[in-house]
Image: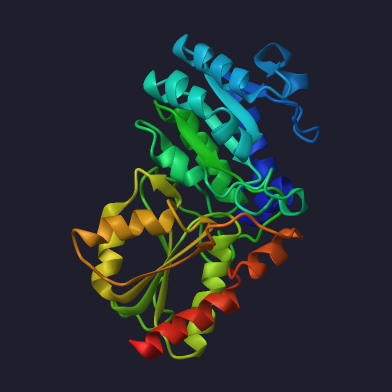
Length: 329
């Protein structure tokens, strides 16, 4: 299927494509289960097609994770579909002990990551999940760049032998693959260079932008174009796997660039910025400028795009800050 046809059929929502991938996997493998907490998605009727492999546990996330862990250690491959904030924090102990401690191959898909909860406010926004899940031994953490990559990431998660946490957004987000680059095979732990230095063909760069997440990676590409308009050679790397982190790719960018920029919809503390800084510190020190949600709970709510701008994450805001840094150093 051509990518344009794929988008026309599947849409631009990572939430929908994550569900579609699970349904297709269930048709291929009878070990695939969907464990829900009062969500479901009528447009992707897993419960109608596989009622015996669909468990609706209600608003009881701790039970949801515990049930999935029990299924996983008995040879099943359960996908836990839940809001990111509840699956990682309300059920943190179960995720840590029942899943990670036992190495149970539970696949948690967390929706409404970052500020994508919008008007729902801090109770539903989730800016701490990367910090929590990457600190859990044995956990693999994925953060795809768009709907297409989310689809591939779900399939990769199913094939992975251990626990996986996958970040997904809420509504439609811009396409990266097809718009900026042809599809590539999704490999856990291997970052993808989406933009080198435009048409210069140069191996070096002024700035390397390391970005993660459905809304953020497209904005990183936009910021790189704005930087190029100002004569700045900018590269963009899609860090779709936060654990295991692609250290080789990050250090390669550190060696070729004057400045590393990290860009994420997550607290500046404990997210991609912290992971990248820790990586380069002991191997190839280079300045790291981190863009993420300030270390605070949002005092006001709005639509997702407006929230990102309100907290300094718009492409123009990132471009201005990078240009200021470059002019001062």
